[in-house]
Length: 397
Image (cartoon, rainbow, N blue to C red; front, side, top):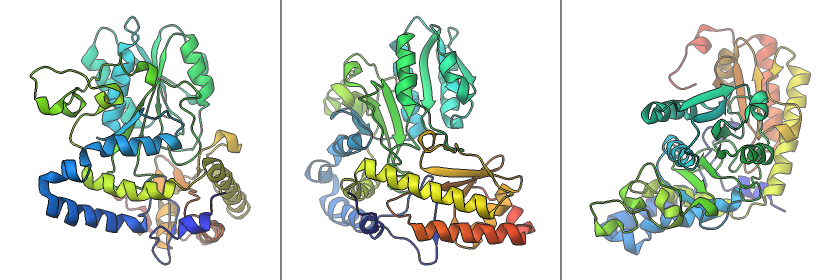
């Protein structure tokens, strides 16, 4: 059983702050500063370019990918890190489309993260030949899967509401229809157990700066099922995905297995920060994490509903349909969130009217939930949010 009091002590949590935004940017593991400083001083500083070999920089993307694989139910050798999540979405989607060359439809849902949809739209324009993106309401995805669909592209947990798609069911439906599936795990990896191998997923992508705590701009990961690895052609054929990068051959030859999905030079400093976080994650039982997440979310929902009747629950009420976040809607959601942040309770806002809170067991406890409920209750009862300063929109919400 994971000791979540012990894991909480491993994170830097500023005094006087209740942090409920780890679903957007995870807090810093205390060990990360020292690990990055050592990478800067001892490796980059003293080893210089020798760090690629001597410090193992070149192997970081695959080595850390295997550690993330445990958290998402992936096979060894099926996950590699590097680049941004949008890049990995493009890679996975383009590769999946090539596996179904006689079809032209990418199916997604209207609740998907906009960047995923933008990448799909751009890929469709590039490919031409009638390739198109079709979106339906999240509740209609299952019924929309038919033999015209080439690829189902779905974010498992909705970034606004926390609504969770049934990965096993939708993957099975897509395969029965002859389609491939790309899962975005941005709000799943580190939030709850995922079983990519058990669900026979084709591709998956995700970021590491949310629940996995790699820091702002942390690298993304991509998963390719072992059965597809030797036939998948990487659409972005970067030099580090080449079979022999330092042979500097003029033509591209894909690397073996998941290595072919590498593109550019790995972000060594960010990977060092991620390594410090994964030292914590290596001790975490995912079933225990999920049980604790559900308990925190249920307590938060009960507390807010009892104290704040003007807020409407935007997340699914049933825990098995919800990720590790709870969202509320209110026409003045932005101002309410700014008032809450001013009290030291940090969540975030998502347009048009969503107050979003991440309940992350590695460092969130019962006292945090109670404190957040109390602050939110007072703000709503006193209309403390009703000030011009709290309505002024910042660049990042």
